[in-house]
Image (tube, rainbow, N blue to C red; front, side):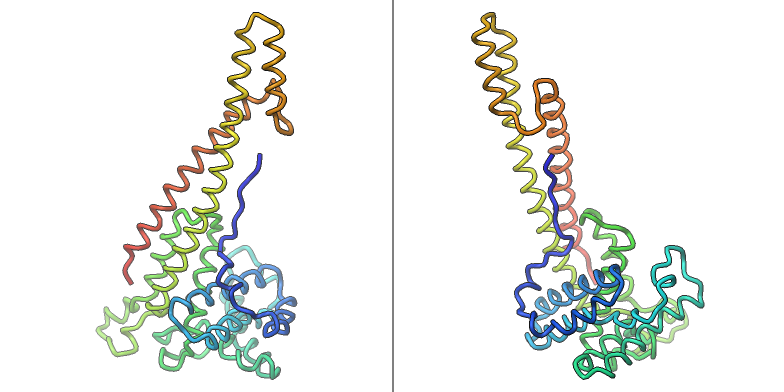
Length: 312
């Protein structure tokens, strides 16, 4: 049975930028990363591109942010693979080692004149607006805007990957978790220490709002892909029902000539792997698949409704 496939992140906007010459060198650097980190870096760059468009950033800044997104985790080149890809929870010592990828990436970029413009993206993408991030604990006024954008894209993709999303059904739960990171730390509220710094959360709320729009776009893209498959299923069901009708007519006919006529019609409509014995089973499978996909479409449209109601 033909199966529908789609990329979780729509690549349309990223392809609209002619980055081939600009990024040839940077992408060669990415090839040195492990496959998981490289894919994550590509996802973050994609998200940065599209967030920047919704923020109405200048194209020059957008390109700068995209490349920063590609290179933000480049410091993980120097992190031991056994720690980087450890499936279990990291120990506190291992987590401290992971955190060094920011300064390691910064140092790598600063040593290379072609990568130097993106050094702060590598350094500051884990900094928090409220000063609770790393490696330097700087606050909003000192965090480059591209690093703030990368932080939102990075955190979103990390959650999506961890939860193994293959569809945007229930994606609003991830966005709700990100909304929490735009709020001030409760411990500061409890201590009544609401200075300008402590009124901030970890991530930029405006950037997160633009991510919502990107996620809605991706959800609509998935709906489109599923609808294409639904149309295919309907065509196959229609064909198989014609076969079913011919079979009933053949079985109800008393003349062998008529039976042969309808059987020949069935053969002409059979596709690879289909026979007189199994076509009814295949028809049943198509009907089940259609019901599942139509339910998915309903759930995806519901996700969009939920996302549109989210408030940061």
